[in-house]
Length: 393
Image 1 (spheres, rainbow, N blue to C red):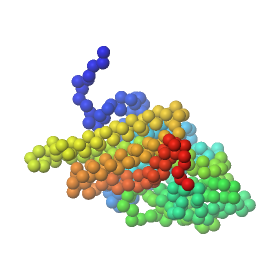
Image 2: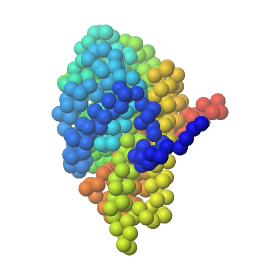
Image 3: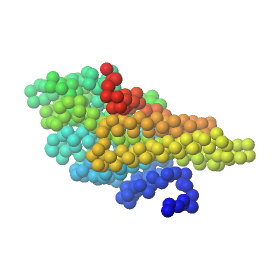
Image 4: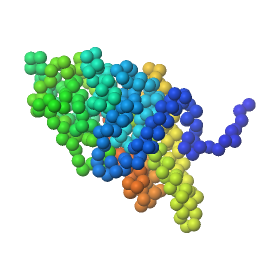
């Protein structure tokens, strides 16, 4: 006969998700959590204010095996999908910009080479990228082709044994500090991917400034003016838009986990603050409206974690489809943003300062809500899967 446990409910793990993880998965999560607490949290507010992400962070995280951790071989850790999700979850507890930088490195740039590159390209780039010694970026979005990458204007034409690329890309994480850019371009033969190295003539990556979101992350434009790329730098297995979309699906999976980490950081801060804050001679937690906000946060966080974990198990079993990832990204990004806004209200005026993490996460999540597939696009992906009717065109 089932009995009710007398153990008190953990406000930071309300439904006991921790018990659903293996010992190895918890060990990986705890290792990332320690790094974030000791290395990232003491400085990330200053990085956000200054609009920087120190390059040495890439090397430090690479040495710990966090770069491209879900890939096999080539110096990569080869962890399962759930463990990779937990890495993203803990990194985004620190900051969405940090998770974004690591995600672009591993799930976009490294994965593109791993999935679509030649063996020579894998041997040349992946070991150094796994160590964080070489930084990559992923050039797909354009100023006039965001949600519709098939209409990209960046074009590569054959010229003997080379390709000549002209065009530009926009909103590229890691762009200005990247050693190699995975660039997707239209050709007479369809969409192709190219490894554009930072010192190739005609290639520039001006940094985008005056951002109010993802400030602890480098965002750039990529500009190509007659950039000559040898055919050996073309990803040989990528012959259509399926190439870049497969990479985006990997990164979006990480976002499903990551945004719950940001939400958890906001909830932790709100609960701690409300417990200590005295208003009208009582702690803020004693008021019904505050308890309602905290209860709603707990609901969304635990629902988001269970969704992420289930999708992770599906991915490990080979059952995960892009539509599943869209559902996870759609729901978890929206829920995380709502939690951040509610947490900000609990902190009152203190909620708008970088002395607390909430406004930083709130601003960041406004971008995550939009990038790597807008909320609207993911909604239509799910709607199309439900109805069998594609509403994009």
